[in-house]
Each structure stands twice: as structure tokens, then as C-alpha cells.
Length: 337
Image (cartoon, rainbow, N blue to C red; front, side, top):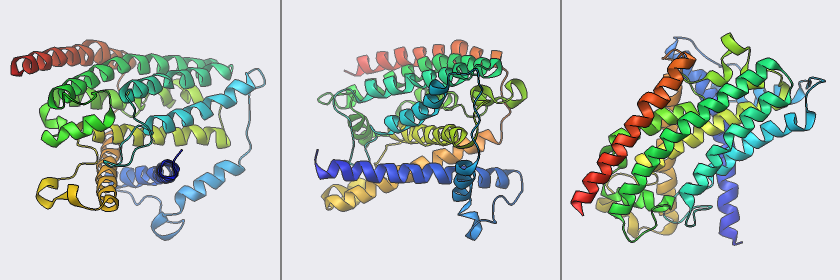
């Protein structure tokens, strides 16, 4: 493989892991700001070394395993979750010239990776041999499967717009989706699809008000009740990786991805490739961090739904709304052809 591929992969992983570490600090700072507290400020200047202290604490803690559990599978579950989080971010185009993987099936690959999350959740709950963990894994899996349908329908509306605006390009390519938004960000052309996708993304990422995977008041700790030390830390990291991935995908599919404002006026396409890469990565990072903040803002503002409300919203509100939006959008585009 070319050197550029490995450099892009290494740089993306470094940024991704760094963002995941500091997303935990960002979460604590945002929650402190919303609740009128100070937040972490003791470890390093302004508390900037707090993520390092948390990692060291988890590494040096003793790991316990239930004697009646399946130890190999219990170890495999957090590893699988981290790998899936890394796999989903691989399709993100960072600029017109930087991307790890796209090919002709970018969206199909993404949906495949996202659908595998349910196996990590269910495996973690079942492998420990704990009834609490099993119940947490089962209902986490049910939640993930339910909202994947709405998320997929919202993505279909994105593909429709891409095929209409760039008929000569492959609509399954994520880069084509971003390039189609040079005519207008899809958040403005497809607002209903945007709302459906964002709500489904909250549920897929297990973020409040859909954080039933870790409903401590109801299931002790959900699917990772029996995990401790660095194995619990792997789930913790995977959760924030999924948060970053969900934010980046929202920015890519609806907010123009690496496209910045007034690119035509300032002639970005005529810049050297290096500066185009800096421009694209910078705007994608800004949009991703903004949506990370929105995820955290919602978590510390809204209470958790009941489980019956969760399923009702997914099956009776989001899915019919997404289907109606898809059919309406298809009809409008058919009339415009």
C-alpha cells in the first residue's frame, strides 16, 4: 500500500484516540458548566491531564471475572466494540484528497459495521453469566436494532439527493455525498431526514435520553456490570469513540463534511493540496466537536425515557416519519427530473 495510506491511517488513529480521551474531559467540563460546578481542575493545568490519570487508574486496577462466565468471550466483547468503533470511522473523507477507505460500497460498509455493534453488546451481557448483564445486553440489542431501521431510512434520503445532484457519481460513495453538498448542505435540503438521523444516532450511540444500555437505576450497570479495570475502560473508550463517530457522520452526511463556507469565493480548489487538506480536516473537526457538544448538552439536559417510550418513538414515530419523508422526497425529485 502507498505511504500516503499508512500516514493517513496513523494520523487518523492518533487524532481519534486523542479525541476519545479528551472527550471524557470535555463531557465532565460540559456537565460541570451546565450544573454550575467547576469540574476537573487538579491534574495538570486546567485539569488537562485528567484523561491520562483516568487511564493509569484503570490500567493498574485489578481485573475480576465471574467464575461461571465464558472468560474468552468476556474478553473478546470490549475488544470487538473498540474495533467496530475504529472500523466505522475509516470511511470518513477528511478532504478531497484524504480518505482511508471508500470504494463503491462506502455506505453499505458503514451500515454493516454499525449493525455489528449489537453483537458486542449482547456478547458482553451473555458471556459474564450474570442475569443483570444479560437483561442489559438484550434490551441494548433490541434498542440498537430498532433504531438502525430509522437510521437506514434517513440515509436512503441522503442517497436520493446525492443521486439527483451528482447523477454521474456513485451515490454509495461517502465522498460523493460530501461533494453533492456543494449545491447546499443536506440539513437544509432534507431537514426531516436530518432530524430522523440525529435522533436515531443518539439511540445508536446509547446517549441520553436513550442511555438504556447503562441504566444504573434499573439494571445495576447494564451489559458491563461484571467488567472492571481496563476491560471496563475499553467499553468506556468505545462509547466515546462511537460518540465521535456519530458526530462525524452527522457532519459528513448533513453538514457538508470537509466543505467550508465561501469556498468558491476564496478559491479553495486552487490552493496547494496540502492546504486543501488542512482546510478540509479543520472544518470536519470543527463540525465534529460541535456535534459532540450537542450530544453532551442533551445528555445533561433531558431525562431518560421509559423503555416503552423508547420503543414507541422508534417504531411508531421515527420509522413512519422517515418513510414518509423518503417517499415525499422521491416524489419531488421525480417531478424535477
